[in-house]
Length: 243
Ligand SMILES: *[C@@H]1O[C@H](CO)[C@@H](O)[C@H](O)[C@H]1NC(C)=O
Ligand SMILES: *[C@@H]1O[C@H](CO)[C@@H](O)[C@H](O)[C@H]1NC(C)=O
Image (tube, rainbow, N blue to C red):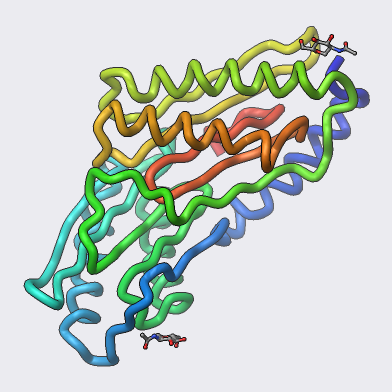
């Protein structure tokens, strides 16, 4: 047994994690550009147009890229919904993300925001197809496994490495979920997803990089995620998707 009293613990974990999904609060954001645009500038107008385009284009497939404007006022943007999220929830998430980014990163020329259900990113610097190493963050459950943490970490790595291969190998959605039975009462659930502007090779590179961060943030924790502008991985002792 990796955890004792597994049922009350899972309920606690559910409460902690699902609170954010219901309230649709962002997990994190980053106003990464050192440059600002000014109020009523063409850049701001292009950004509005870009958000509107993404809001329309993303939900049917869960992913879109677009660019608006020209020269100094060119803006590149991208949004991705988690692979299982419905068209309706994807739409809501991308709309919320645009509104929040306008507030949290007002006048920043480049920014990204993450939710459980989606991410939205824009920049004046072209980023399509490139792995974003700059904006990664991690989250972990405060609780640790009761027993062999080394073994637990190995199981997490085993599951997520399998999902990394599955997501990046000729998989048009660059998305995979799966589970691993740890003992008779404990199941480990995992998720791996890349933004679909990446090649399969870069997706794998991004995911394997995220997996290699797990020991730093989330070793022997009951749940953890490494989330970036191009890919994310996560593990939990309850189903991650379908919420
Ligand atoms: C951009 O705006 C932020 C927040 O208002 C400010 O801290 C920063 O100095 C500005 N950067 C430039 C290059 O003007
Ligand atoms: C914990 O798991 C590791 C890796 O499987 C193993 O080598 C080690 O002997 C285990 N330790 C205990 C105390 O069971």
